[in-house]
Amino acid sequence: MIDTHCHILPMCDDGPDHWDQSLEMAREAIRHGITEIIATPHHGKGNYINRSDKIRSLVNQMNNELGVANIPLKVWVGQEYHLGIHHRSDFEASDLQTLGDSKYVLVELPSRQTPKSLNSFINVLIANLYIPIIVHPERHVPFIRKPEKLYELIKLGVLFQLTAPSLIGHFGQSVQQAAWLMARNGWIHILASDAHDLNKRGFRLGEAYLLLESELGHDRVEILRANAQQLAHGGAIDRGTPVIPHRTKRWWSPLLWKQKRNF
Image 1: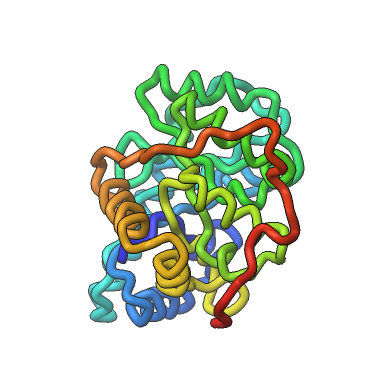
Image 2: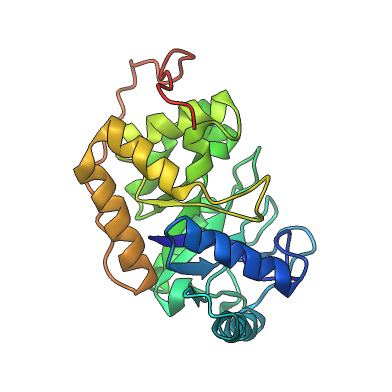
């Protein structure tokens, strides 16, 4: 498996505190069947500043450490770019680190409010030949309340990445329900772990893939797996055919989905 969103680099955000913890995360990733990881440290969130040159240096060192420790994991450069409430619609290109040096950019939104600059920021990215991928939309309160907003952004060219533990209920029922609604409607293009450590924010990527396959079928899961491969290596993402929202339909219901399995 390829994990396209992981905080495995040490001493740069709320992930590992030192190299030993990063290597333990790497060993755990291998145990979960993950062979490649895109390292995505926060940038612009709180006090976390991780520009391209810093990330590249850390990734190079990480791969060296993995080689010395004989851990068969490959780590690629990436970044989780935080679009704050008061963010300008433009950006400094030197601030950005795309995923695996591709055209794809991970964009994180504040949890409770959508920045007014979101659409203009998306347009600027696309005009500069970048493709925005909004991460964990199922944890963004405005999307939980109105999930159909994802479809509106998909029409602008946005992709969406779902967090694996959300499907299993790690972040609570409301997030879990939103995650399944988005997945069922074809509004999700990539599945990733967003792992930060070995305990509270672990991988659980394989578990989520198995659960998705049991509910949505093998073909849907294979598209997500293939998209992760394409993302890591700069290929084209299969956007599928998203379900068009029906304005008269009630999108939010506590009975929307009932989990059948406990992991």
